[in-house]
Amino acid sequence: MRLGTLAVPISDSIKEALLSARKITSFYTHQAAAIDAIREGKHVIVSTSTASGKSVIYQVCVDENRCAET
Image 1 (cartoon, rainbow, N blue to C red):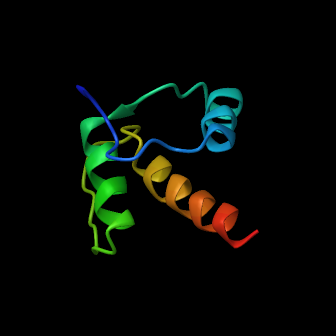
Image 2: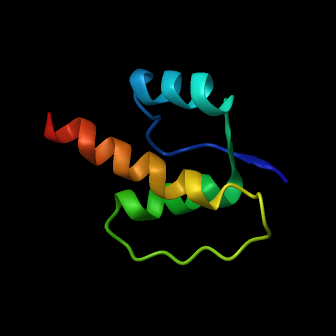
């Protein structure tokens, strides 16, 4: 799988949480594209193989929304 880049980087706190909890330091192209689309308010369906990081997509977006609320 190839690595992608987010249009807007994630916050340092979420970056640290992903690193410490799941050892995630970068996103795959499908993750970056989906996160960018969700941030733009688009509906997203992700259909990839098992263990491809689908859950990380929604977890990042939920965490960003929760951080914005505080």
